[in-house]
Length: 209
Image 1 (cartoon, helix red, strand yellow):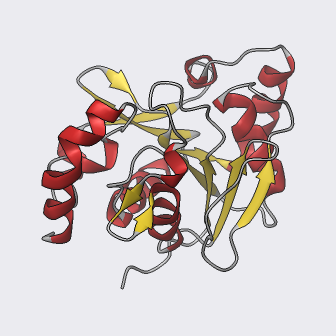
Image 2 (cartoon, rainbow, N blue to C red; image 1 turned 30 degrees about the vertical axis):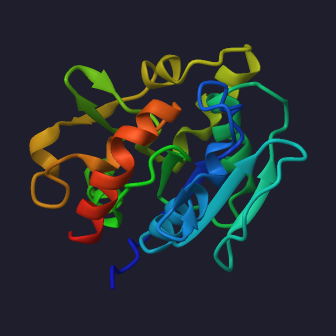
């Protein structure tokens, strides 16, 4: 059993339109669960509170007890606005907030813990693999909420624009070598072709540890 990380909350963005997938990714099946159920269950092993941000009227599968579901304040405004909506809905004031999308079904609780601990007293800890930042698998200090809100108020939608305003620690592959050497936690399933490639081989690898 993975212990929860002190001072950590999480936000899970589920309101994307899934245009490339052609069906809601939150409902895609994996080992008797849906993507959203599996990711929520994984995060709840590590974070003391989880807020799921969904689109207005979006149908969701049953989620673990205690998970709070809120709706996007503005339809189609993107992940930056979704992050702010979820952040404002947190019932406590944690030290750090882990952010995830609902297209990473192989997310590992140990991965979440590593990212959280590297955030520490920093404003953010963001995985950077092969030069690519992963802001939807990152951890943010609770105190940066005013800057997030100010940016959203300008109409900005890009997560990268938010990152550029933070003092962040960049995590590279070697920092996950002991908990997720294949970096399965960062595998994004965005199209039916992605899912066909990853479904059987990766699911069995996750089950086998």
